[in-house]
Image 1 (spheres, rainbow, N blue to C red):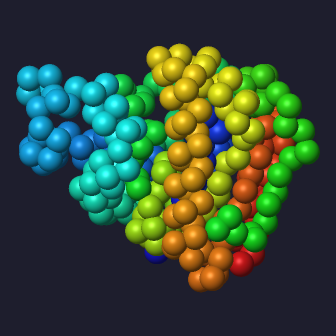
Image 2 (cartoon, rainbow, N blue to C red; image 1 turned 180 degrees about the vertical axis):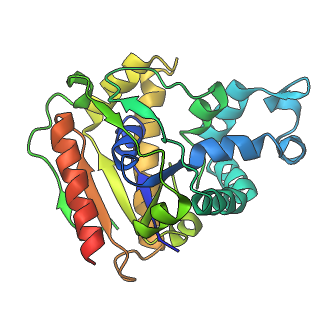
Length: 268
């Protein structure tokens, strides 16, 4: 099977933009989207563990669930243990079938709000519980961020067969706040980085309804969890590399960095 590469980064850093670029040639899954699907089949377990407080009648109260996850590392660990293995298996099955989450014409997003459903938006910050010496392909210009770029249309290859995607040699999965176990399922990582003030401005424009304090805490928490998971999964020691791409400049420069990463992966 092709190597699995995860796409990580703190909230607001631009993982989806990176995924869209990669999807022009490779299959890319959104693991958080799959997690949102899996969660809908785990409501009984959630009620048993968390009680009725996160439910509105028979339905999951997404805002209450989000608050519980945001406030408790134990809650995030429980949910991760509940869904992660199934998410990874579904993801691998879809890769084998040539199914990706970005197989369509897309536009670089400026400040467009996410089109994902409410559950995915809320869970995106929490699910899928080394700052290594891999190539750190960072751009010099960081002041304005990609949300100020001109729109540029990219077209993902949607007509390849599963065998043709397999022949590319790599599958990519966009995840957030990964754990040691999740990182162990991958062969490497691309981390999207962006200065905190730029990421905060981007999140504010998306209008998630989060307070400034919540946005800031979420950014810090995710960076901490990502660094911890890289260290625990021993990426540098096991030869798994972490490539960093800086999303703080224009779209063309981001694409240039991504192309460099892909060339390096192909040559290894």
